[in-house]
Image (tube, rainbow, N blue to C red; front, side):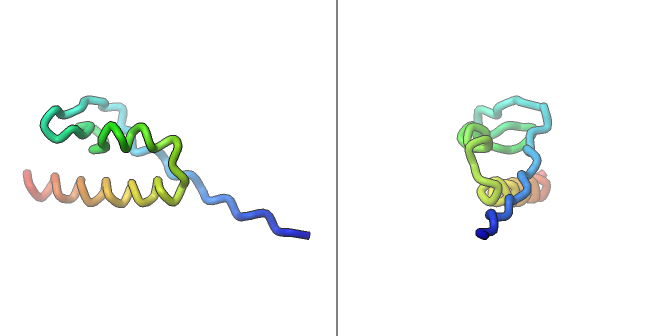
Length: 67
């Protein structure tokens, strides 16, 4: 009997419900995703979503450091 592949848990969307695109950075002011990242989120694998969350965490740290 073959084992079924283990399903990876799906990360929670980083959307904060504050959807306002910044024309200068071309990122959402709420979640800091680009339009492309927002569109990709629902087609991405859980591993790709986790990598995106890591990039967003780094963006938040950079934004906080530059305030």
